[in-house]
Length: 104
Image 1 (cartoon, one colour):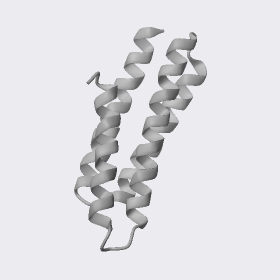
Image 2: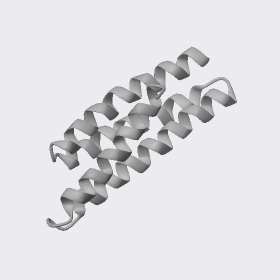
Image 3: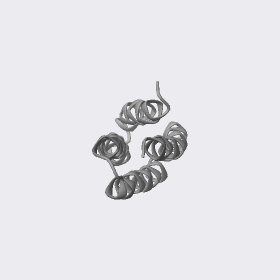
Image 4: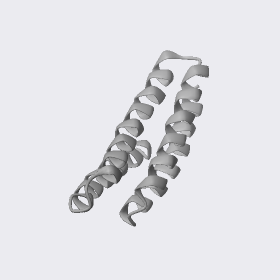
């Protein structure tokens, strides 16, 4: 179970890293889509986890991705003048999510 939880988080880190790159490049809408998929995958894996610590770890990861996704969506909806600053904040949250999954 522990190995599966680690692999699930590692697999979630890859799309989160891609979403971060997209957000840096200004493609906030696609970054949100990728984060949505990563969150969904973590939640699905949590449902079938056999132990509570691994389930909690995956659900915590899903919550972290969800927060990043919401910041990315907020940045995408921000007025043009505020979008760069909001985008930077979203990128920081996205980076935090994938770095946590990678063990930093």
